Image (cartoon, rainbow, N blue to C red; front, side, top):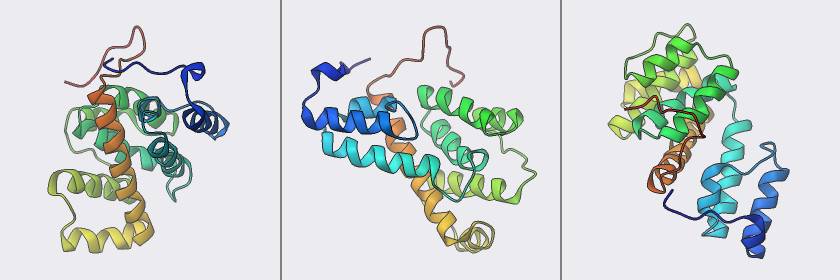
Length: 181
């Protein structure tokens, strides 16, 4: 870890307010990257709120939103993000084979057209820097415009999370080994 994370007793009033807000949220605990973001308390406050919306309040259940998050974690080879969201994807009902395919950079086979479209959109956002017109048109049909906006939000937010975790070299919990190479 390149950064000393503050304990609540070391935080100034702005940092502590954001920390306390995260504990009172649906998460119940501060997300690890927020502990780095607290070096910019206002950014931490807004980023953490956005993260809560994207985690809990999109039109997608976890089984689907976690596709975009795992594609993002894999794109950035974010070891901690992969570790955290693989568990959440499994808990949300995602098939282990899909997770393994994303990890190994193989195109998964989905039984749900929404899952396939989220995967295609997320991959295109990261690798193609946008969507072709045919992909966009099909994504509107399958996901709706709101769905596309929320997938963009998930990919963008979790890019920032992955960059934070990678830059400050967040370690996996004791005993855990990264699955990403």
